[in-house]
Image 1: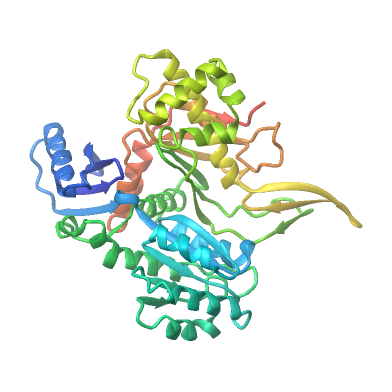
Image 2: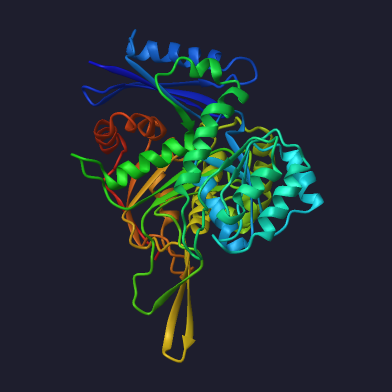
Length: 467
């Protein structure tokens, strides 16, 4: 037996997973409250004590960790055109595991600077212009940022013609230069920037978040938790040498404050008479719905879906829904237990959280007419042919209605423009192992993949599009 310890320092709970890499098996999992306000190691030690009760005393040969504690990796970006370089900057940040607090387009204003000052981001991503294109905007924004004398590092990943000038303008600040995130019109190049963001997370953010003592216990790098999840989903979908993946997939994590959606798929048009509009999206895409969550962002679900939809799905009156939502927004630690009303409400909220988040993540298609006849215009990713949906989050794993909730990720004929899956197999991460497997995959990809195939529960059902 060769035990390896995998740690996820979450914003609320620190989760630990023990894996036998020789036996390719989960030895046990445990969790404890993340004590970020005192010493993060206290929460870790509590979780390890719980793990020892389940598994006995283990001597770990290796230890790896990820973290979203203390707000995770908080970023602000600025670009030129909202649909182009600004969107490229957002996609690069999200794919690196960041929480994007604000995206600015065009030239920054003094009001924008006041807002940036109050946000206090961990990293600022400065982009704008294709290579050889517009330089005025990115240079202006560099001059504006320089007036802040920022303590946060700035990553420059815009027009290469202006990169060095921006660096000189920001002399005295911590600056990193990367390749342009959009070197040519409509071409994404976000991997170098994502690598730089992760490197900054390791060197600076860990210490700023009070994680340096915990990092000293590790055998290898710490990464943002969403980055670990994306790494796991890439492995599960595409496989690795010696082990095949399960194919294109969507993963949805419904949390208390946010709902994260991941897609590993090409997503380009499937029909000959369909044209693509906008910036092509990455094969591995992550989005975060900061207004959609089961407790801290509970009102965001109601606002997005409408109280009528919540009442209809829960079977409760609109007045009762409002009462319970107001209560849960304050008492964020309350779980349904044996309360039938809360259970019904959580079912409705989780269903609508998934429907809203996946709809925002997926692309859309519109019918139009040209001189050549009827044509379709696609924006974003076409996920209709995705055959695997992975779900996790307390509201999905602690219920018998997981399949019903997950079905809201599927295509709905009542909303034909949304390119969600037409039918997919549902797999459930009931033990919260996805982030841990992302960590493990950096050193033991075959083992991580085989464990995910075994541990992600498939109850033998396939959800079809709404009829």
